[in-house]
Length: 547
Image (cartoon, rainbow, N blue to C red; front, side, top):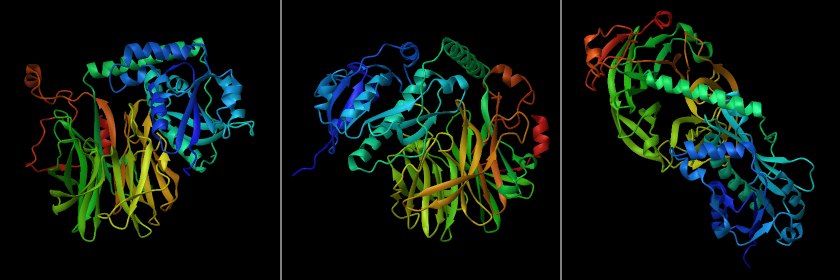
């Protein structure tokens, strides 16, 4: 006899629903263990945020993946039955295991009394975070049951806050509904457990809050447009310190001069045959496609070896490590939708692909390291939907880097936009691995770094503790920092200023005027792959004064 399916109903405001609700219904209809029995309509009047969402959707959700999410769609075609929420007896006769609340009418929560597992819903704000300029928008998946007076939280996470309310809600719901589906699967399997978290509360905004939203969003939009009109770029740079990361004197570090017309970021070092090499993302402003470049340190000088790895898509985050006498690299190549392992054929310039570790996955900023007789991979997988999805850190383990990788049982081990993306790797004085996380700013990528010591890492568990924060205050007028790495007692990190690079050759006036006039250092024409130059490391204090 086949096992009984888990019977659910959806509570909606109207027969026309948002895309994520339609997708949820399609998913439930196709699921082998879940049955969508009915849609329960609980009408409610349109609030101020509904009007704001509708207005912004018509005017501003025309691209960047937002268009399909902005329109409402009829759900009748996928629902076998529609019931009005006021008919409690009819809902009770459906013999539901759970109701999924996809609307705003909270009075419908009284229907929890006629289901076995209560009502499951996503709780979030999405508006207050924009007004306050918070970098993250949090959400919880909560359950209301007749046996409990207060909701219990089954899942908690956050996404990066977007500039506009409509954008923020589309990005939020796209990810939150993914975890809602996972929560329903756990409920169907009897494995859903409450966690220690506070349910999110959304309150209708006041007229003053709406005015503040309009004013601040306008100011932020104008500032962004002015930056573009002035030709300002995020000019990332890399610095090196001879001190271990825990005692690093960031303000005394020496700066590696940027190549002509490009920036450097995501530094990693490795020592081979007594010499220390630096591998970095090099981002040429003309092509706007990152490549991997290498330098060799020699006292107070950095010898630029040149571009050592290039693909048809953007590359960055060149994590390098040694294994059984060979040197390997795992660069970020999100454009290739895979995690690829490269092996040095003629170090440091020759690299060849030896294995695809993960395929058909938008993974970024991958770390590989050995811990407790296993190899571990920590990588951020950018989930479906628009917006900057840097919240979901996944773990995999293997017996060998070239072996088969098994997903962690708790993936994602982190679902937090404030720390879900890697920004380097260090070890503490006792050799314990520490993950460096990128700390975002409000609609800004790379506002700071944070070091988390990995306290527990097994195939079934993960636990980490914050041990250090790095703020962009070590040089004057910095706008951010997002990477830290330490190997052999040498610490490398990056930092950014928003400034206007000169691009020689673009205009006649540019060619006629002295290239030194008001030009930030390092914005001359890009070096070719074959060129190798020796550049003195800038003294950090001197660079700060020049800025």
